[in-house]
Length: 111
Length: 115
Image (cartoon, rainbow over all chains, first blue to last red; front, side):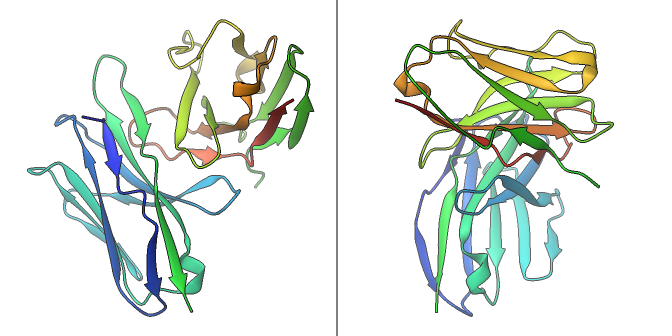
């Protein structure tokens, strides 16, 4: 099983709709979780951290499910500008304590 | 303030040549990372510098790849005897402290094309 897995998509969603995608991780001891956003031919940028209690930032909600070992990202009232690749990032707590990036989920918001 | 900068933004080279890629991290950031990203692929970790500690080189794909960080600031990634499979975008990131819960700030990347 891969350490961090994401559905590559693409998710094609009409503007204004709600979209959600998950990311699963294999190391139950992982402690830190993030969502990064990467626009086409641009560098990744932090979208939001994911806290145990879940967190919300405007139209974006991130949640952590430790029992099932996945994190989720929900986008409400999607905008054309939300079109991007969303990278799931998980801290791997082992002897080498490393951050692992998922391959990303591509989202296309359709007008 | 200034973000992470990388140079050159694009580099085209011939197979077998050596290349040097430069990264200027955010001032005051102690941690610096190199990744590469091939077209349509995820980020591949290459190397990690944290303060004065020995770098984590576990991601370097071969001994043709090396990196150094001078004075705890600027970093150079060197690829010797480039191969076509080295073609990718090389991304540098820095963070205030290091792994775990620390936000990584990425530079715009260097797009390397090996002919």
